[in-house]
Every structure is written in structure tokens, then in C-alpha cells.
Image (cartoon, rainbow, N blue to C red; front, side, top):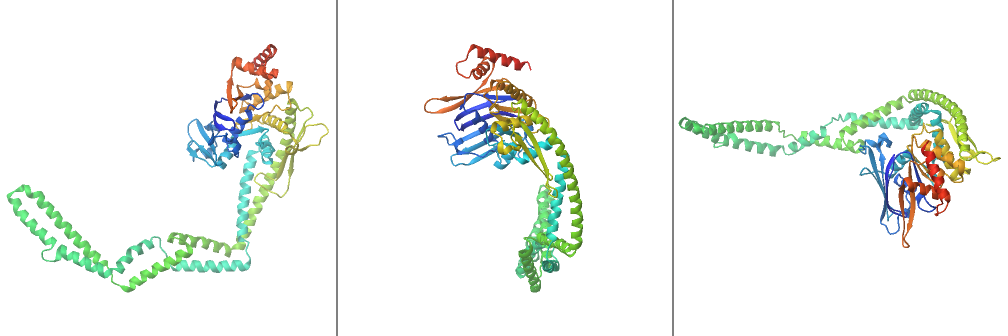
Length: 554
């Protein structure tokens, strides 16, 4: 549910903030007041392509913000965007440079992702570009919703993806004999070269530590020898001096016991010096002044460097490459056996797809007949007495996709004697809106899109038909949040919230404001719509009150 919509510098709207509840939300006002601009602002918020004319004259940028129930957000968006709480804030901007930005709960979101989410959240219907009903894929989805074919479609999609993966593997095996032999020779050489190197993970680090020692072995030995002599071996060494100090302090301790701690510290220093000297002797023994060993290490380092240029940036990557080409080598050597196995698996998947497509086709055929009949019934109640509506389900055998082998198309004829033709090629905007209303009424239980927008759905209807349209919108509003722009009082009186859109013209600038109508103010607006003029008669007021009272009892 859309809880709030805030608009700033959008078209002729300077600044506006509206709070919404659930149910049927109707927008009324005189022609040109700006009702459809509100719908365009909502579309912009939810990822519609931006237009520079939406930027109010003189403004640096336009901003639309909306607060939407968290429950309406897809699960895959909640974790990466850290969406918590009861609602989510969306913000969309457009600046003078034509740059558009979108933010979700304070975090930037790609416009493509926002548009994808927008399609799952809101259906726009009316005299606008958002007419999803004309998309063949959407028509197919609507039919499958009615047929309750979700389970079989899910299985078919899974089998189809499996089949496509097997096809890719098969294509990889389809090589000429010459190319196959060339690859086998190359892989054989590469595997041999890597294996003969006997690489070990961590070997480079060991060489990097060892080489400085080998290169400076003589210098290291001399330095260690000098340090050891200073510590311990020479007369007057640190070790000798410390031992003399310790003996003096032992004599002093016999006289004054308070010096005991100092004597102990000197003893510890003697022990530490002895340990350092021992470690230096051990280190000295490890230093090997061997030119041949140095050459071997340098050669080893060079070999690893050459292998890294060919096969990977690290020893681990080189070994991983070897394992990968070893698997490819094995597959190439056994390509005939592998190809036979893949063919068997592909044939099994093909048979399963064929069966699933047949089942799906039968379900769609049966559902198409029932859905067509029920939609025609709804459309006749919506002021289209001669309407014909049919759903064509044509299966192309041998053609598989994730949604089956069927091509689905909605066919429509609104006038007697006219043949059924594609809905997208002959229906007017008002007719499309009513067809969608009829479909949505039939599919209300299955439809997962939470928000529906009908812009001027009342085109070409009035009287009893308008009441019927209002009743159907009210029925839809029990399971959806429905926004409706209307000129008909018979529809407006069904709204759970009634907004009046007004255009203010100061002579130098034009702006839009919106009032939420209740009580007498709402009755006055319905009366204005009934009377068709700004001067409202007593009869119009009486009729308006009668309409509102009648609807409130239902």
C-alpha cells in the first residue's frame, strides 16, 4: 500500500504531500486541473522513464517521494537493502542536466531495479503509456493466474533451464577432429609442464625468505660471528661483565638483603644473553654459503615466474588451471561417450518438456474459454453490450521456452459485425481500461499486484454503467489499493477517500493543490459533478447526498 506521496517541482505542482489509506481512492476535478499529473508523478517515482517537461519551470530539480508498506516489497530486495520496519521510503529526483537518481531507504538503487519493482507493485491503466495489458507476456501471465498453473510453469521453467545447460555442454563438445587433436596436444603439454614443476602452495613465500639469506650468506656469517663474540666469547664481553656484576651483588646481598631483587635481575639478564648467543650460533649453522644452491633457487623462482605468465597470477591459480584443463582433457578424450550421455539426458529433458507443454496447453485452453466468458459478462455490465472477447491459445509443437510452447493473445471486438482482432491493435484507451477492470474483477483473488491505478476509466460511459464501474472498483478495493481518476459522480461516491484536484492561477504562475474531501465538502463536489457547472443547484445537492447515502449502506 502507498501510504504517502510527496511531490516537489513536478510539472505544474510546486509542492504537495498526500496521505493515503487502503481501499478506493478517487481523484476528481475540472478538466486540466492536473489529476493525471499525480498519476505521472507516481509512475516517475516507481521507475518510469523521465521527461524534462516534468521539471517545473525555473526549478533546479524535481523530487517525488513515497512511503510504501514493507509487505509489498519482494523478498530479494529486503536483505541487500536492509529493509526493516513497517514501511519503505523511495525518493526519485530529476535535475536540469537530465540526470535521474533513485534512493531506497537512504541507499542508492539502480533505476532498472526500481522499474522492475514498480511493475510488481503497481498496474497503471488508462490513457497513458503504462498499459501492461497490451503485452503478450502479461496476457499469458493473466491466463495462467486464472488457470492456477503456477506449479506446472515452475517445473517447466526448471526443466527448460536444465535442457539449455545440457545444450551448452553439447555445443562445447562439437569440435572438428582436427581441433580436438590440437586441443588435446595443447592440454597434454600444459599439464606436463605444470606437473613437472612440482609446485607447492606457499613455495614462493619460502623462496622470498630464503633468497636474501643465500645472496648475503658470507655477510650474514660475519655479522653473526661478531655479535656472538661481543656477547659471550671475547674477554670483557657482555656476558663476562654481567657475571662479574652478579658475583659482586651476591657479596653485597649478604650484607644488605634489600639488594636481592637487583641481583635477580642481573641473573635473568645473564640467562637472556646466553639464550641470544645460543640462537645466533644455531642461526649461523643454518647459513649455507653455497653458490649452486643460490643458482637453484634463482632458477626455481624464474620457472615459477614463467608459469605465472602463462597460467595464473599465483601458484594456487596455476594448479587450479591444471585441474580444469585436466578435466577438459578427460572430456575430450571421452567426448564420444560424453556426447552420448548428454544426448540421452537431453532427450529425457525434451520428453519431459513436451509432456509439460502439452499439459499446460490443455489447462490454458480450458481456462481461456472460462475466462473469456466471465470477462464478456463483466464488460457487458460495464456498458459494452455488443462486446466479444476471446483468448487465442496457439501451440507451436517442438518450440520450447520457460513458459511453454503457446502463443497467447487477447482478441477483442466492441461493435456488432466487427471481427475479433488483437486487443492491442483496435481497442481505445477507455476500452482497454474497462477490459482491464473486467479482468481484474475476475482475477481479484489470484492477482498479486497490490496497487491498481485507473486513469479516466469512465471514458464513454454514464448512468447505470457508471454505477456498475463504481461497484466493480469498490469490489477490487477490498483486496487492492485502487487509485481512480474520474469525471463521474456515480464512481466518485464509491471512494473510501475522495481527493479534489484544483488548479490555482495567479496570473504569473500556475500551481496545483489537492484537498481531501469529507462530509459537506465531498457532497458539494459530487453535486458539482452531477450538475456539470460551478453553480450548484439544490436538486444537484439533493441527488449527491442521495448517491452518497445509498453507497454508504452497501
